[in-house]
Image 1 (cartoon, rainbow, N blue to C red):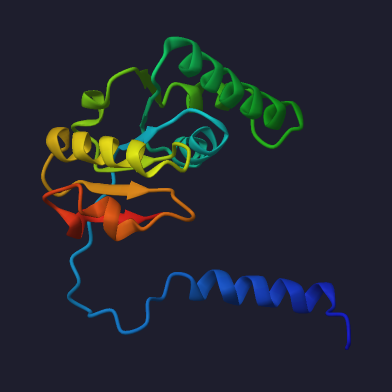
Image 2: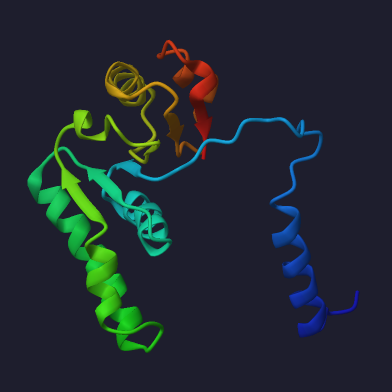
Length: 171
């Protein structure tokens, strides 16, 4: 077996990145939903990392935790990650504050009501996810996308906790 060259690896990554945007057999008239604001449930490692991606892309993020301590800890980690990147010269120092200004930390799921997309990033416990999605179904605006970050639990079972299973996705 031959080891691929850096050029071959780069070409593969470029082609894979382009192909990721193409969904086979997707009807041309499929309605797209605009995402102007995102809610994240959980400010731990996964939730914080997901939130950083949206804030970096310029999208406002409401991040919800169960306690002020957990919220503060999660936002401190996010700030530290951004600061290390700025210290390494990946972006200007003022960008740390610009990105952090896109975060709004809250302690209640109701704070997510106007978000276009909400991503649940809590630990893998079906009962907890059922509780969260039941509450999201109650508070979220019509047309919002409700996403779970589960890696092992049944997404259909999670979606069944809502009156809008067609709006629930795995992400």
